[in-house]
Image 1 (tube, rainbow, N blue to C red):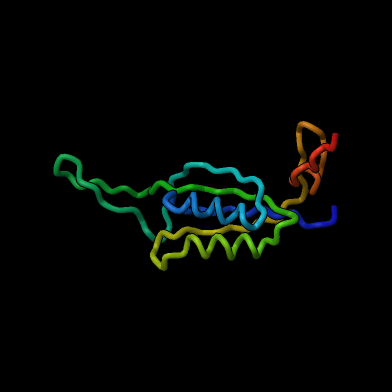
Image 2 (cartoon, rainbow, N blue to C red):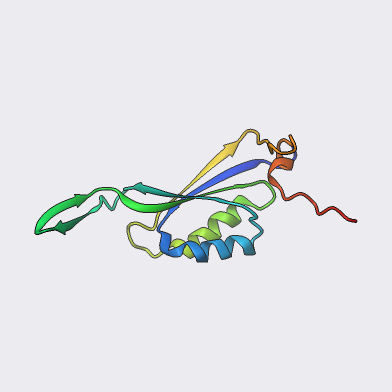
Length: 124
């Protein structure tokens, strides 16, 4: 295993997802996992009114984008995501960076970097 494998987890507003996806493609990110999640940070939710009664909405809908890289520089992913997602307002999101000790491609049994990089096209 030559390159370090890193997982980058981005919690963000869904409105910027298409821009983020395009930017990740530009820098060579070939895969990601996206989940709809609920959460709150500094925003602390908001009040909505239902039939005239105030209801506290503490958890807000967000997207969680998980990206695992070894060839694409981690800093490039962070800088690109920050450039797209930063508005300067509370609720822009968070980025978490984790070290990955190993990975396994179930179909082939490949481990480490080989499990997450795109396989080279087979020449005929």
